[in-house]
Amino acid sequence: MTSTKNLSIAHKWFDAFNNHNLDQLLSLYDDDAEHFSPKLKIKKPETNGLVKGRKSLHDWWQEAFEQLPTLHYKVTSLTANEHRVFMEYVRTVQGESDMLVAEVLEIKEEKIVFSRVYHG
Image (cartoon, rainbow, N blue to C red; front, side):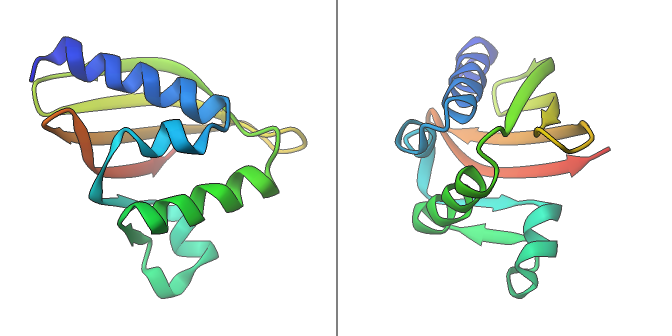
């Protein structure tokens, strides 16, 4: 896999996320993908911040899209190699302060297998 293909996946990821298109977003992930987020750890402590599998990803993001209809990510930087994409963006939600975020997508065979979020 090339860094160009991985950058394409990242662009598709942002498009799906910002349009709250859950099906399109999940199509970028492997069936057994894992996702770690500090917000997940706070909102659902029993997960210890980690969800596994498309069903869990679906439930997590569906809840976020329903509770935060103005949630939007503005890309500030993308860096890719043949294995991962490092994404920096600004999380915006109407009525909340903007948040700086970094996220790493681990990619194998054109599917995201692991993602990890870092808040600034």
